[in-house]
Amino acid sequence: MPTESTFLLAGLFLLLAAAGWALGRFGERDEDEDAPPPLNIDYLKGLNFLLNEQTDQALEHFLKMVRVDDKTIETHFALGSLFRRRGEVDRAIRIHQNIIARPDLAAEQRDQALFSLAKDYLKAGLLDRAENLFVRLAEGSRYQVEALEQLCRIYEQEREWQRAIESGQKLEVLSGQSLGLQIAHYYCELAEQSVSTKDYTAARAFVKKSQSGRPRTQRGALTRARIARDTGDSKTALKLYHRIIDENTYLITEALPAMVDIHSREGSNDQMEKAMRTLLANRPAMKTDVAYTAIVNDIGGIKAIDECVEEYMLSEATLTEFVDLQTVNDSGDGDRQVALAKVRAALSKLASTIPRYQCKECGFSSQRLLWQCPSCRDWETQRPFTTVSFDSLLQRSANVQ
Ligand SMILES: [Zn+2]
Image (cartoon, rainbow, N blue to C red; front, side, top):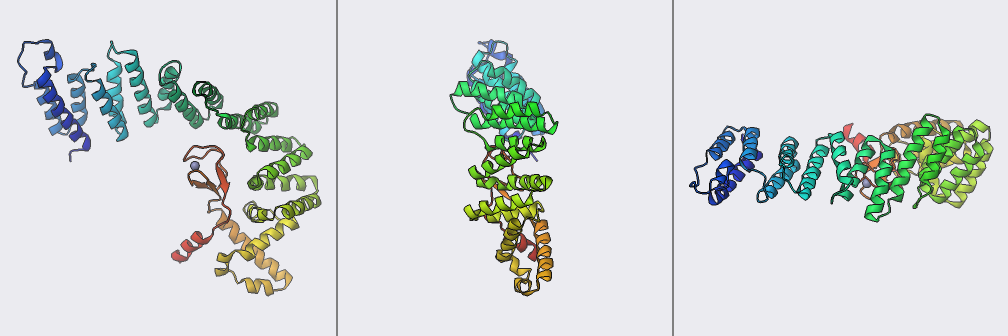
C-alpha cells in the first residue's frame, strides 16, 4: 500500500516538475540557459522510486534534485514540518539537515532551520541534541524566547533544575514576563533533592531562594516544615504545618500525616486532639479531607480524626449499597467498631485506585499531589476532589460481578 508520504512526494514531484520545466531550474541543467527544457531524467527517476514505494530514496532524490535556494527554501521548510507533524521525524530531520548544509544560507534561514531541526530532535526524543541546538539559538537569534521556553521544558524532563533556573531567569529578562512561581518550584526541587540526601544546609538555602520571589509557593513552606521535622525541630515543624493549613486548607492532605507523626513521636497525641478540635470547629468543611487523608494514610487513634472518618463513612451514600449502615448503627459498641474497621479497610483499598487530585486548569487527575501537571505543565494547579466519588468505581465493580 502506498503511504501518505508517497502521495505527498508524488504531488511535490509533479508540482516541482511543472515549475522546473517552466523555469528550467532543475538540477545542474538550470545552469544551461539555452538548453531546451528536458524531459527530466531525475524527475522520472524520482517517480520510479515512488512507484516502487521507496519513499526514502524518493526523498533523497528530491533533495538532490531540488536544491535549496531562495525560491525553493520555503517548500523545503513546509515539507520538513509536514513530515514532523505526521510523526515521520527521520525524514523531517533529513530535510532540515539538507537546508543547513547549504553553504551560503542567510543567517536568519540558518536559525529557522536549526530551530526546526531542534524541534525534530525533541519530537524524536533526542533531548541532548535538541538541547544543544536550543542553547545555541538562545544565545542570540530571533528564536531566543522560544528556545529558552523549550530549554526549560527539557531541563524539567531531565530534572536538571539548576539549568532550568538559569534558563527561566534569562527568559524572564527577555520576555518581560514573571516566571516567579515556576522558578520557585525549581528551587523546591533542588531543596527536596538535598533533603533526600540529608544535606539540610543546602536544602535550607534552596528553600530560602524559593521563597524570595513572587508569587510564593506553599511547597517551600512544606519543605521547610519537612526539614524541621527531619532535624527534630518539632515545634517549628508544627507551627509551619498549621500556618500552611491556614493559608491553603487543601494542603491538609499533605500536612496531616506529618503532624500526626510528629505528635506520636513526641508522645503528645492529646495536643494533636486539641489542635484538630480547634481546626475543625473553625473549618468544618475540612472534615471530608481529614477523613479521606486519614483513610488513605491509615491514620487512627486521634479521636477527633476518627470521628471525621466515621461520619464520612456513615454519610457516604454510595457505600450503602455495600454496607448495611442501619445494622452497623444498631450493633453494640464492640461490634460497631469491628464493622466500621472493616468498612474502613475496604475504603482504604478502594481509595488506592481512585484519583484524589485534579488539575483545575485541564482536569488531569492523579492519586498523588503533583506540583507540575504532567498534562498542561502548569504549576500548583492540582487540588483534591471536593467530594470523593466512589460511584464510578462501585459502578465498575458492580458491572464486573
Ligand atoms: Zn493540567
